[in-house]
Every structure is written in structure tokens, then in C-alpha cells.
Image 1 (cartoon, rainbow, N blue to C red):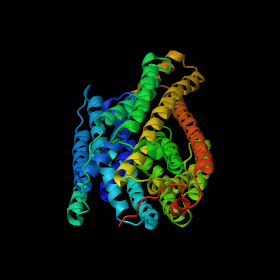
Image 2: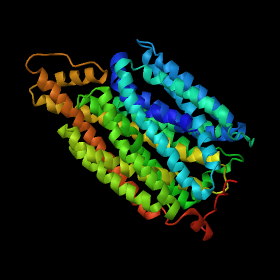
Image 3: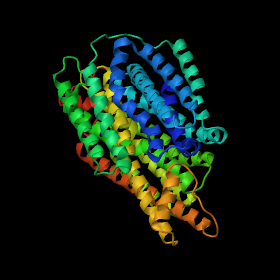
Image 4: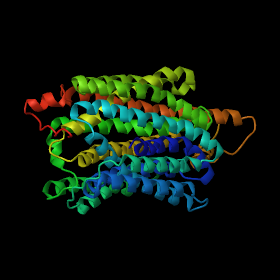
Length: 502
């Protein structure tokens, strides 16, 4: 299961590293490169609950195997993206299919891991699980950096041998394939897929359409209404895709709120940090991979600590401390971005990773432990849906802010060099399609420096917003995440305790 899920984790970071090179080679638009990342995340979030239910219905081992195969085939086709006008829709389409494969694979894989351990051991077990997959995630930036220097297409093809290893290990270990057949709520699946897709579409295309555009407003409003309709439908459905009433468990709801806020920051970070390293710092893709590795140093250590805290005293201390440490780390990291010095940023990158690592495993495991009367696949599907939708929303909003702010910064900084607004706009437009700015002469070096500064300032704005999100997470955790372990809370009769795995 580590190899199966680790493949999807690697893919999140390895693609972010290669984005500047992919954009340059294929001539993709500003929003196009974001859809390469967000199409995958959106497909994950929109189909995750369905994937969890399919795993329960058809058998987890069989669904994990199917998900691995779909993911590997889609990866190969992403690597085979043709050049020309077909490039952008091709690679985005197969990134979406990758996301669907992952949505089938991950809930079933996590459910198999969870069901293998009694409740008092799950924190440590999942801490190890997420620690290893987190370590594999850190391989993504390093491997991606070096592979991109050879050929960016190799970042997708590397998934194929990993998938083969995962399939061989599944055949050897023969995990549980018990089925619990039940009707699948296809109407609910359509509502949540359409609602999430439209809401994210409006948020991400706002930089191109404009925030006041009927298309932007309409997409966000209709998407939100469809999500509300989904919730209403689930309350009355005889076999709901998601048991919305689970959220009446206040601890479960609080954990999911924490996860949603955390993922607004966590996954988009890879995209913004890797493009900052290459565009603002002028690093190679391999050096950009090492830049992200500092984050994982803190993350991997804190994940283990967070799991142990959960098992001993419950999730609240780890989540509260993680929110505070993460916010401080991101704030200090952001304050150094415009100085363009990697050495000055390293301690704060590690600190930010440590804060995030303290939060993720305890919040996720506690949410699963607190869910009443539900199958593991379904509950895992709920938490992962919340996580991946948070990532999609975060990338859409922050990406739109980055694009808009970067245009303004380029106009301002190049205007200081005496360039007219029309010329500054032309340079911004060239950069948006991955092309180098035209022009030369004595001003060329100053223009290039102005572009680097502009992107650093734009990234700094995004990181300060991430800091604010983590401050909100800290407040939510402080107020709403209850103290104590699941067994202690359940013993008071406040919440239903999930049955321990046999």
C-alpha cells in the first residue's frame, strides 16, 4: 500500500518541479499550467468518496489493483503528450484520469492499512505510513529535478516501474478483499463532481475571465449550489455516497475543518515554491528539488512526533502547536523571499514543514477514529475528499492571486526602469506562455532582475496569505478540537466510538 499510495504522492511534487519546463516546451497558458496540477487534485476530490464506496463494494484489493493500473497508463499517456495545439487539452485530460485512478486506489489502500491495526495502534501505524509516503514525496522534487533536465516526460514515465512494484507486492501480500455490496449513489456522485468542478473552475479562471465576469460568478454560484444540493440529497438518500450526518459529530467536523485549511496550504506550496525557485532564484530544476527537500526534513520528523502525541494524549496538542509553528514558519519564510537568498530561508522552510507535519497525521487519523458507524473506506473517502478539495480550492484562489499580482508587479517594477505600460504588459504576456521576454541591449539585465523581483514579490503575497490560513487553523483547533483520546471522549458518551479492527 505504501508503494501504491506513494506513487500518487510522488506525482504531486514531481510535476510541480517540472511545470516551468513543461510550459516552455509545450507553450501552455498561465491557467493551463495550473490545470495540470489542479485537474489531478480536482479529479481526486470529486471522485474520492465514490472510490471509497466502490472499494467497499467490489473489494479493496481488486480496486487498489485497478487504480494502480489506471494511474500507470494515464502517466504513460501524459508522458506521450504531443506538441502543438493539442498539447494543453491532452495533458490536462490524462492528468484528470490519473486523479480518477488515484481516487480509486488511495481510499481502499488506506482502509486496508487502518483495518490491520487496533485503534490504539493506528496513530503510530499511520504516522509510519505517512512518514514513509512523505519521504517518497520528498523523492519527487529531487528525482523530478534531475529527470526534467534530461526530459520532462520522464517524470510521468517513472510511475510505471513503481506501479509494477506495487502490483507485485499486492500479489505477494494478498491483502483483504472482502466485499460489502451496496447500492452506489450515482446521483450524489454527479452532484458533487459537478459542484466541485464548477466552483474550482470559476476560482481558477478568474485571473483570465475577471472576478466580475458572469462566467466567474456563475461558475462559483452554480458550483456552490450543487454542493449544497448534494448535501441535501445525501441526507435523504437511502444509501448515500457520504453520510453527511457524520459531521454532526463535532470532533469529526473539527478535524475535517483543520484538514481543509491545512490542504489549502500544503499541496499548493509545492507548485509555488518550485516555480519561485526556478523563476525568481534562477535555479535549475534539480536545485529547485533540493530547495523543497528542506520542507520535508521538518515534515517527516514532525509526522512521527504527531502520531505519538495522538496515541498518548489525543490530537489537540499536536494540531494546536502545529498551527502556531507552521504560521510562524511561513511568515518568516515569506519575509525572506524577496531577498532571493536560499541560505536565509532554510531554517524557516524547515520550521514550516515541521508545523505542517505536526498537524496532518493526527488530524487525519483522529477524524477516522471518531467517525461513528461507518465503513473505513467510506470514512477515508470523506476525509480525503475534504483534503483534496481544500487543495484544489487553495491552488485555484492562490494561483489566481499570483497571476494577477505578478502582472501588477511587473508593470510597476519595469515602469521604474522607464518601460511604458504597453511594453511591460507585452513582457508579462510572453512570460505567461513560457516564452522568454524579447529584447536586449543594456537594459536586458535590469529587465531580467525586475522580472525576478516581481515574481518573488508575488510569491511573497501568496505565502503571507498561507500564513493567515494557518492562523485561522490554529484558532479553529484551539476552540473546536476536543482534548483527550477517542476512547476517553467516547467513554463520556459524547460521541460514538468506532469499532476496533479485529
